[in-house]
Length: 402
Image (cartoon, rainbow, N blue to C red; front, side, top):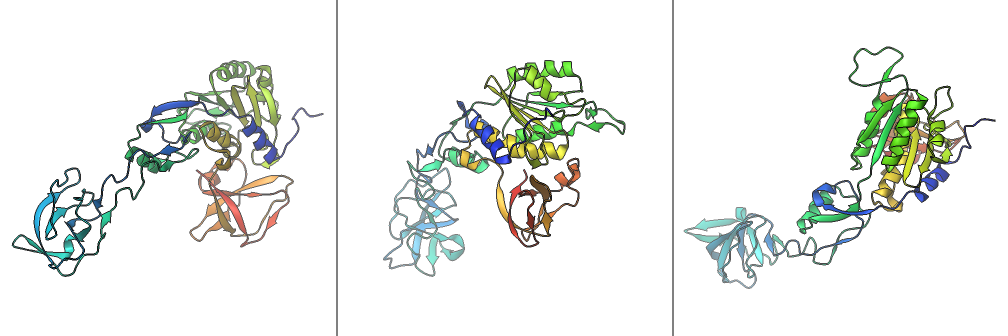
């Protein structure tokens, strides 16, 4: 009987991962360090934005309404950061600029292109409408309004919104300690030139590191090891003590030198599953050490490692960083197939391809798990159920690659 383990379904694997993923640990940081984390609480505005009525254009602020004359005496200027502090009457105007505060009496702004200045007098051709070209106090957000929602990813625009309200610190998840190990006698560091035809450069290590960094994670523990059982045991036993999440690439199948599963077991890592009915990434391993370190062992082929990370590792990372369970995983979109696609296998199949400008998904011919060029030339993949067939033009759901 094979010791490969029982193959489980994709849905069961994901449920197992999320149900055993620890909740985020709250940690207060300076807001500039919060990018790519998730809000752990709603953020309510403590100010109005803008804090006062402001001009939306360069022009002149006036008191509109029942005015008898279209001539106004310009009595001052209001700049962004240096407002006019006086009072204006019905036949007076203030020179204003985009973003400058308006005197409380001003209820309309006239664009500078629509006025004539004659001997210091501003002359209009028509009466301005009340409220024109004015940014009203609080029109963007008001005091007490929700400006950031729990579980929302802190992207540059949200960062700017929060800073606009004067937020300088945020509750985010405590920084995750994540380690990456790549394995195999064939892998060579990028510094080596002129490798042999039986060797490959260690692309998975840098690919996984980049995927983690896109989630705001700094990868400090980052190494490679050849197919040496004892050396692998020493490195894994050390890293499971020092990390919250450990990623291992390669050595997880059942070949003569695939030592990872046995070493993990010997190091005390409790297996949750070790094979999922998907292609690529079938021989993925997930387990835990002392309920403190989550261990994911991914296949060594680059497409399998990459897709395995996105499907199974990314949701756990997102949840530990503060994302809501309802929003885990990749962004999705609807596309139409550019050709017939048939999944002839009895497992879920992830098909790489490109979504063109017309929203048509065009799959690559070569879907082998070593085809890293197809991966880098793709912007999405489509998920197909076992034995499923979809004809050209069918609308399907596509997952966008980061």
